[in-house]
Amino acid sequence: MHYPPSNVKAWYKKVEYMFGIVGVPIIEVAMAAQAAGIKYIGMRNEQAACYAASAIGYLTGRPGACLVVSGPGLIHALGGMANSNMNCWPVVVIGGSSDRSQETTGAFQEFPQVEACRLYSKFSARPSNLDAIPAVIEKAVRTSMYGRPGACYVDIAGDMVNAKVDRRKVRFVHCCPPLPICLADHNAVTEAITVLKSAKRPLVIIGKGAAYGRAEAALRDFVELSHLPFLPTPMGKGVLPDDHSNCVAAARSRALLKTDVVLLLGARLNWILHFGLPPRFDPEVKIIQVDICPEEMGNNVKPAVALLGDINAVVCQLRDFLLKDGWRYPSDTEWWSTLKEKMDSNAKISNALALQSVLPMNYYTVFHHISRLLPHDCIIVSEGANTMDIGRTMLNNYLPRHRLDAGTFGTMGVGPGFAIAAAVVERNKNKGQRVVCVEGDSAFGFSGMEVETMCRYSLPIIVIVVNNNGIYSGVDPETWKEMAKMGDLTSIAPPVTLLPEARYDQVMAAFGGHGFLVRTVEELCNALQLSLNDWERPSLLNVLIDPSSDRKQQEFPWLTRSNL
Ligand code: ADP
Ligand code: MG
Image (cartoon, rainbow, N blue to C red; front, side, top):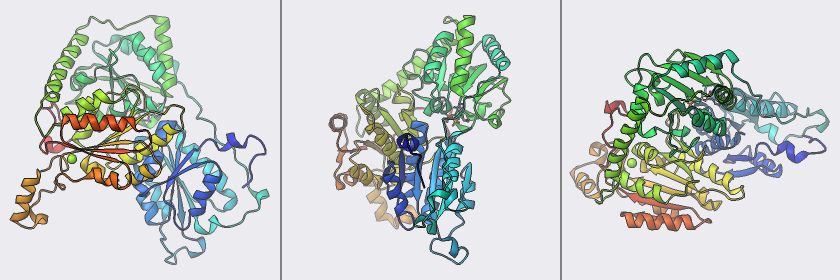
């Protein structure tokens, strides 16, 4: 491959990170990537590698690359591709595959990789020959970012890796520019403002599309000019700070149920937003939908107004309209009083649970103290069932793209990969921010071996395992022993149980990180403080909580059908 004579650095500055696991036939690809200035992070499972690469896309707006070997390596990465595609995050997966001359012969790890990736990506291809590689890679990178972002796959046959190429024959391809910005139709903007003005109970919903689209500055202006209440989705948290006076997250269910006009900014009306339908929404609710993807318009609810365009550009259009027009939603409405009352009463219930001083601790106590000690600029990665749901309400975000979680696909096992990606990005900044990974014990198990990766690269990630001995709930050690006496545990142990008081902290300690076993508030605060003071090594706090600790009574359960 030949490079342009000048400005070489600018050419390949763009994809900065590659995650993967090497083996035949792609070891040399990783080495070549490093030689070309790309940072290569070796992971322990392709799934986690792909989660990490996809988080790079979300955090930086440029895709991360994920490099995997043929057959099983690629198949492990499919989970990460699916997760990335579902979340609308750009990622480029590069898979080695068996030699072209051995196709259909039962070659080592032979698998129809390009076909397999189609279901999990926007684009999946194998360059027809060596000369075509730059153009196909450019197309993959561009496709991953343009339009609705997503996953792309490029297949590299083993025999291509060490083959020689005539440099003069390679067609040089320039790095693609950031995506062209599109604005909403002017008439649609006017119509949207008219609908907003007619609302009695308006609500702005901020999704992770607004976070990805870097709409935070315009959105702050818009919300403050219009004085509209807003509600973030789980990863929309932090686009505007959770403690902003217009944030009504603490009255989420009430706000969704009673609103008559929603301005939907970069969020889909899928399960996360209860499909925009009754019983969680008013059947007459009007939706002003802002999205970059035309096919999204009208999914589940026909929008009153559809604003097709880049979210930051569209929010600027709305803001500019208000700047001229001067309209503002009044602050003395019944709607604002209803929302404020509900927020106050919900806060009282959570505070009462948080201040319970019983042992073992409950979720609310644990999160109350974590939230007190965490710096406001930290990146919070979270997964699990109760751990993620309760943590979402108790741990505030103050900055955009500072919360990553199980997301649209509800994927467990994403946490360590996301945290590693965030930590490598932060380390390359002047003054990096702290990455905290709050995991349920079950969620942690899916990618737990990535603590070795954290230790190997000295990434000062703080992993907090909120350990209730199981999936949703577990049993205490005594009950477990009694059960074991009663017979074969494979026949009698509830399928939700995991080993009580498992020593996840020792896993981290085994690789040289800090491991803390935590039972009390005092131990929790001390361990967290010690971890926050160390910028060289990762820590794992294994926080043992009451195995039957649960969420406070919900007006509507969040997602579990079994709770209905
Ligand atoms: P959440 O999980 O927060 O509800 P979703 O992932 O469901 O959010 O929705 C994000 C939406 O944002 C997707 O429909 C996607 O097409 C859209 N989106 C992504 N980037 C942009 C952008 N730059 N401008 C407008 N919409 C965007
Ligand atoms: Mg658990």
